[in-house]
Length: 184
Length: 215
Image (tube, rainbow over all chains, first blue to last red):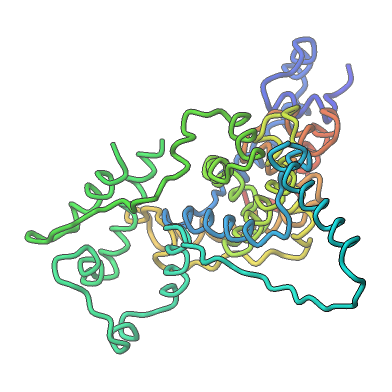
């Protein structure tokens, strides 16, 4: 009987090998050795994990995505969204008005400057957080103090700053553990 | 347990007596929480109808998966972060064309993999350097030598994966790390199940050669 094919070895890795071929595998030392080597490689590969980013990173990523989408030149909605009477009626009225003016007014070459009016947009908490995170990302404590930063006693901020490097690392680990537990 | 109480509990072991730890949730945080009970198709419909919070909820729900796929290709946090952002922006652009023929997660996987395959070159990846305190793993019981050895082995595996042909690399990442069935991987990569299985087999065989007897 022929040895297992590539596909069958992939199935065997998933414990999904056809029973008739399983009989061959049980008897064939060459196929068993090949499967064992593939399994060993897979185990080695699978043991490499993605380092977990800071719990605060996820908010930062969400804020970055939101900011990037806000900067998109077009709205990602379907063009059919515009085919609704609440939208079409004023647009049609505007078109008719422009056409009427075009007929009624004398033809003169005028230059109309376009002025874009940007309304102030209140940044969301995530946006503000991203900004703050970007600002303080590379700031060390001494620089912050020399710049006049003070922290009120009794706040969590002060507590963090008073921790040693090892304590801060332990705090990060504990926070991460707790937040992961909540998420799960 | 709420996030607030979780954070408060996390503080407890390191806070000195007399410290006051105040944990406050930002007033407008978690806007997407209103979509907590919605399934993905409802979120897509709401986002297409113009509800930005619905897309925020999609990002919130799938960001970890997308980031992890991107990290597997990029092998460093900074690039993985950029790739994740690009994947979600592309998803936003194409959301109106998503017809629900596959799961939203499959669609997002496809976008993320395509972004990664287009952006990540075949050159050796810029693997994150190991700085003390960068990671949250508890290494107290593990000797420094063992940690170093483990990281070296991980770096070797990452380099070997980066050297694989694109389809093999994508198949391996989706199968070995995300444990997706071959059918879903085939849908994501636009190939057949047979091709996916063959790619998976060849990826492992090539990795075995590249890693030699190191494993």
